[in-house]
Image 1 (cartoon, rainbow, N blue to C red):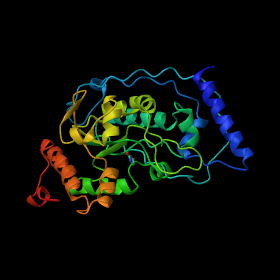
Image 2: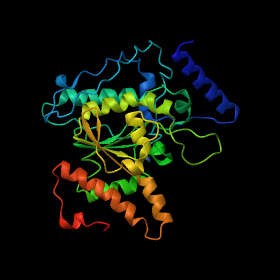
Image 3: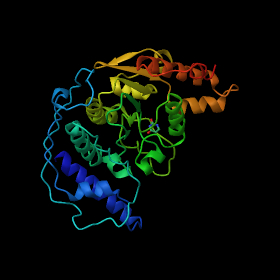
Image 4: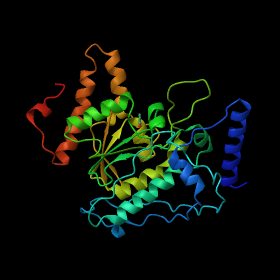
Length: 313
Ligand code: URA
């Protein structure tokens, strides 16, 4: 049976199980509905950066992106369904930049459409509320990469909007940046599922991360950030395909991801957990994260005040 037929079977089984359990409707994001109603486009692999018009010089080495398998032609699943109102909030599409970078913008929009309609992991297709693509400036010089959406992100369709996200936003602001001036994405675009009745988050499996990684590679290839901050050991594991990142040992030490410098640091959730546990309210860990960010700011030649240098000392 083809992968497509397996996915279709999984979706039908899930819907039948929900119906048998008394469920009368399912919540579908407008973007997903639109993607389901449209014929599947034949996907071309994204071209090498040399062909992508850029508004600034492209410093990073090209990231090789595996060619997507040709998608099977299919009839629309729900051709007559029209959403009355958005069922969930979805990440706003990137605004097309002024000037010549139209090709990059079109390629980014095409990638986003493809990712929002992804069916590669049947178990996540049936459990997710949203595909969490990413947010921020598609031309950002600084990119943050986390592990996977949590419950809040799944609901809102935007990365890092829960408690950890609020801390990340504070860190970004302390750097003199905004969520709109950087780019934020995750290794995994769907929330890792949990058995019914179980709460909390689950770590993405190596298989899930390897399946989703090509999307992140394409995002990096198109954004061409000057620096990537990897948030936590799982982000390092997913990006570099290594089994145990040992983030405590690795943080603060530059890594290289196919020509782009990567600064590994602690995940904001870890900082929040330590803050709750420690008498000094996690000040030492916050200082470590902040020292990592000072290195990033120095490398990007961002202005740093004396006050900023002294945070959490
Ligand atoms: N943790 C992550 O790694 N990513 C999110 O988007 C939210 C929490």
